[in-house]
Length: 393
Ligand SMILES: Cc1cc2nc3c(=O)[nH]c(=O)nc-3n(C[C@H](O)[C@H](O)[C@H](O)COP(=O)(O)OP(=O)(O)OC[C@H]3O[C@@H](n4cnc5c(N)ncnc54)[C@H](O)[C@@H]3O)c2cc1C
Image 1 (cartoon, rainbow, N blue to C red):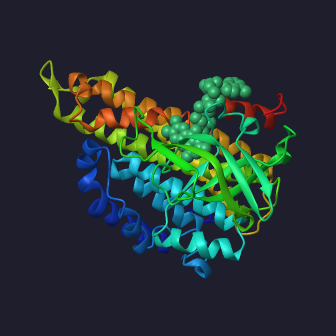
Image 2 (image 1 turned 180 degrees about the vertical axis):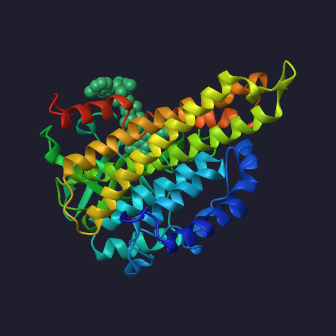
């Protein structure tokens, strides 16, 4: 359509082509084996890094090829087609969370030590906010960082840390003062081989290949130069980065919903009942028509939020409330949609939907955690309501 600036330009089409080829050659052929083994080779990170797919949103000063957030969105969409979502989640936690925090809030020294090797894929990162006692209420974290000379001494524990059971470092939120206010939360880059740092892999219903971990810190000493941002700036930084994280989750959820639609349709065309293909029944035509409509709505909403992000990143003044509202709406809409699409996909498979050998079950399990991670549906509703002037987030 003339007059409307396209979201993706010609160079993004070439980038999509390269990303699709990489995922179909390096990831998708192994998805089944990795899922069965509940594991994948750690050197996948260096393969992604060497191919340049960790670099799109970062400046070439640190080894990136950007910043180009539209290219990053392309990578996320293509990666989600690899059908091993735990693997995609680990790669995402490393790049969309840990690396991005270091880029946004770290000084040159931290960027040299952590961002550069993260973009190369030679150093793995994770983001650790959630604790056994609190997730939605970030301000209620109790992990404590005590100042001691030019070091901080950190004690506490974290749970559900994607990529956290094998990462080399974690960007970790800790309380740096006794006052319960959120001006007492600070971020640190903590080396996973520090004395007093222990961890274990968690067993999830979904994301079977993911190295999701619980972390235990017992008087872990962290030098002050590993503090990420000012003392007390952590809560603000977490809230601002949530927007990008939720947008990336929305992009991948739309792709997963589309995959469920395609997978379900392919089966419905093949499988016969009462002498005709399942897709010959109008009830299934309508269900797929509904799904296609909702996926289109989800993509339009998500792309609109992406446009606002790109505009804000490139210096255009964007109303903050609108960016937060659209991102929260996109996250809320697409995470449920992805799971409901996968549920339809399981249903159209009949008994085959209950078999582990079909991909429908994996789509169904893997999309179920979407409405929980990165802020639950209810938290999204609270935020949207607050932007409408209806109570506090
Ligand atoms: C697969 C997965 C990966 C994750 N990865 C990471 C990670 O990499 N790093 C990290 O730090 N965390 C991670 N998390 C944690 C995630 O962010 C939290 O699980 C999530 O924020 C919810 O917190 P919670 O589990 O403590 O639930 P709770 O906060 O205890 O919530 C329980 C229920 O109460 C509801 N509820 C809570 N408060 C309100 C309210 N004010 N109004 C209405 N309802 C409310 C919630 O919606 C939810 O349904 C991950 C979680 C999962 C499942």
